[in-house]
Image 1 (tube, chains in turn yellow, cyan):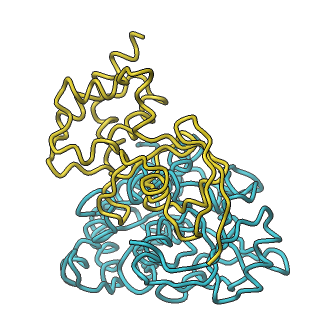
Image 2 (cartoon, rainbow over the protein chains, first blue to last red):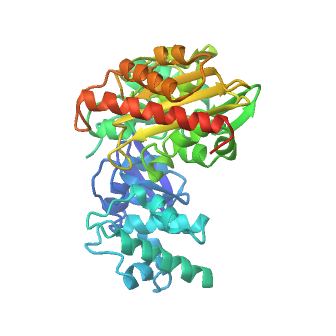
Length: 158
Length: 291
C-alpha cells in the first residue's frame, strides 16, 4: 500500500498529513483532524450525512479518498460559524426546528450552503431536489426546507 | 468500511496513465469519479492492487458540438451534463438521464465515461447511449480508436475496453431536425438503481413517420438491452396508439431481468413495457417541438 504526503486546506486552515492510499476523506477529517461534525451514516454513498464541500461542491466524503483531496479546499460544518456567530443556515435550523436527532444535519447544511451559493432564492421544489441525496430518518423534511428558506431570506437581506 | 489495500497513482497526463495501466494490466483499475468503484472496493467486490486516478489529467471534461457530433469528455461530471445548455435544449434524452442518475451529490463526482466503462447494466447511460447510437473513443498505447456503443458492453461489468485503454470521449450523433428523445425510469427512491427504465431516441419524417428510432432498456439483463424488434417494427410507421402499444410489447419481450428486492421478473418486464410506451410518447412530443 502506498503512503502519500498531502496538503489540503480545511475551513481556511492548511493541513499536512501522511495518509495511506485507502484512507477515506471522512476518516481523515474525523479521526486525524478531529473534525467530528461530519458524520458517518450509511457508509455506502446513500445517506449524505458525510457531505462536505470539496472546492465548493458538495460531495459524500465516505466515497472520496483522502489522497484525492490533495491540494484542494475542504469545507466542513465546522466552517459555517464565523467569529462565534452562527451562519444563517445554522440559525435557520435552530429557529425552524430543522433537526430532531441531528444526525443528518451537518450534511443537510453543507448541501444547502452550496445550493444558496448558486441560487439565492431557491423555490421549495429546488430545495427538495438539492437535498434529495441527504436522508433524514426522522423524516423532518418540512422543517428542513423551512430552515433553508429562513437562511435564504436572511442572506438576501445581508 | 475501509477499502482493501492498493497503491494509488495520480498521473498528470493521459500518456502516463496509459503507461501505468499497461504496466499493471488486470491488477489496475481506472479511478474516475469513484462513485461506483469506491463502494465496490469497500464491499470487496473488487480488489485491484493499483488505482490509476485520472482526476488530475487536464482536458477530459467538456460538452460541445463539433464535427457533426455532440462530444462529451470521458471525465465530464454528471452534474455538468445535467446543467449543460446544449444538452438541456437539444438532447432531452441525455438531460432526462443525467437528472436521475444516483442523487445530486453523487452526480457532482460521478462521470459519464465512468458510468459507461463500469459496464453495469443497472447504470443509466448505457441504455441512453444505445438509443442515441453513440460511439465511444478508447485511448490506449497505440492512440485512439472508436467503438460503436452496441459493441461496448460484452458482459456483466465487462466491456470491449482493453486493460490499458481509457474511455476518453463519447460521441453522440448531432441532434437532427424533428428528433426527440426521453428516458423514463422507475426507481424506489432517489439514488436507487432502476427497477426498470427505457430510453428512446427518434427522428420523424416531415409526414410524421418514424425515420430512425433507438430503444434500449436499463437493468433488464446482464448487459443493457437494445430492443431491436421494437425498433424494426416502428420503422416507417406513424406513432399512433396501436404502434406505441405494439412497440412497447416487443421491447418488453426483449427484457430479461432477474428477480430481486425491486421486484419479480414479471413485474419488471411489465414495467419495461409501460415505461417504453411512455418514453415513445414523450420522445414523439419532443420531436414535434414539445417539451
